[in-house]
Amino acid sequence: MAHEKYGYQAKYVQEWNSRIYTYFFPWELSFGIRNKSSDIFTNGYGVSELEDMVQIVTWLLFCMQYNGISFRRAAILKVLKKLCKYLLNIKVICIIFAKK
Image (cartoon, rainbow, N blue to C red):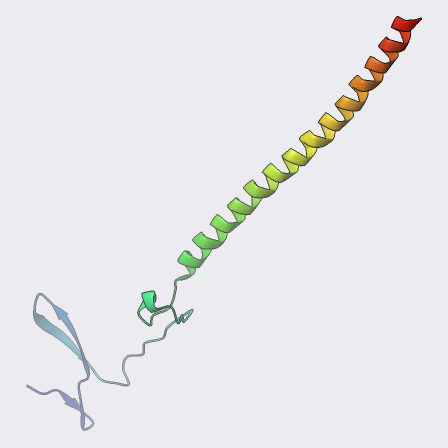
């Protein structure tokens, strides 16, 4: 049961439960790959936009966390430095008054 159109054989079929429902010819179907990748784990197919977006959002969250921790540490160091200067000044003043 060969299906022909304009002298061409059907190249693709739609099958469900081992039964052929539709025949397709080469000019009736096109298969485009978006975001092509040479990664062997994608088997020659592209990467979906959703997968890319999940990775980008994860990177952004990690960057924000890393920067937040770094800025917090830097701020704590500045506060400790000022506090130490303040406490040393008080200690020096107390020593001066204690000697008098």
